[in-house]
View 1 (tube, rainbow, N blue to C red):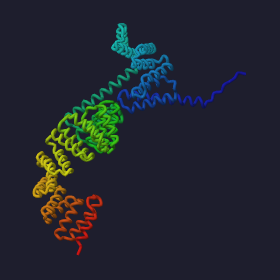
View 2: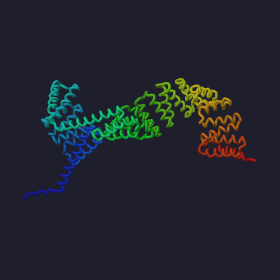
View 3: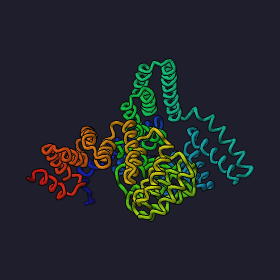
View 4: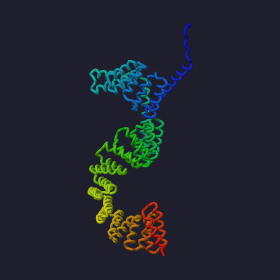
Length: 556
């Protein structure tokens, strides 16, 4: 009796289901792939890759999935040229007579500059395609031309180039898939050209709303949504519709995250109009780094964004990377120094401030850097001589730098060198006669020097220039109270200081002193009590001293 083999119908059904799924996935992949070739939308590319991978999982014997998947993954940078070649060789092994498998294998071999094997694969594709071999013939002619350009061609290659180019051009009529793709591409190009031209015409005549509506129609009416979202974004920016502008740029990047031009536009708008949105701005800059263009400038911008977030470590890292790529850039060195100073790494800050100053791109800018370096010497290092020398160097570079004179005066005051402090503050006043700060500063130094009348003049001038300056009102009151012994006049200025700044601890304390001097016991007690309450936060007063003053008010 002959042996019979029984086939499980469930196995046949499962295999049939896999084949059906593979065909469906491949068809979907072809649709997304074609759409991607027309409109270059990254979402189409991702969908195509996913569907090709699904097709391979369901049926690993379909050659088309290998060479098309290799093309898309190589374009995305997910695989190397050699891996793409191996994928195409797999397709060739599965279908030795498949024209496209040979053609794609040849394409990647040409990319690897392996011209002999590439030409062999193109010729195999031509033999397989016969009358429908227009594409491999044209691609082969291009490969021969590249071989000649690389100085690897022979006289015979010139003849072959002409033959395959001309024959391929003539045989295009038999390549229906290519003609179909060309027709779709031309139709889409015509639509894009029409929408773009009419939209530009409407923009030129200030019909912005109509132009915007037209571009919105183009988003759905063509295969180039990202192009028209970009145009709408640009138009919205012109019309100060910033939210719409940002939304459109984001939609472009959803479709194509590798659109560098739109990334630059978006990050510029975010920094200009949404400075608080540091997270998205940082994300944009990090994506821009992937293009490896202007990396030093991008790290520089990232450093400032991290500073805004008070992320000291990342800000230092970003500025360091900027400096590493452009060591002679004074602005990068200065920013790195500033980041180090924020992290209280003062020795490193001094090093890079000195480098920025030595590069000196501009006297005015460098004088400001001197101010930053001088502040570290004065406040962090306690090196008065180094601070003074640095401030003076900055003043030589820019004699009009008001803040440098003030900083120099403050340094002398900290060292209790009153004569030099007064001179520095007077130089500041000469530089900017209408700036109230210089008068307030010199008022303190003059009063410390017992030049009471001169201190009064200085504070009155400061208040004249800035009546809202509570600090000047309080100090003028002190001059009247302690210098002129005029408690009544002093109290008016203390009360004005409190009116301007209700949380001014010292002003309440001084108002209490003036009231006590005038015999206003209850008022003095109230002012002292308020000073004690505020002092819990400000910690500017000796509480025991204030309590003694209160007790003294009510002593019999």
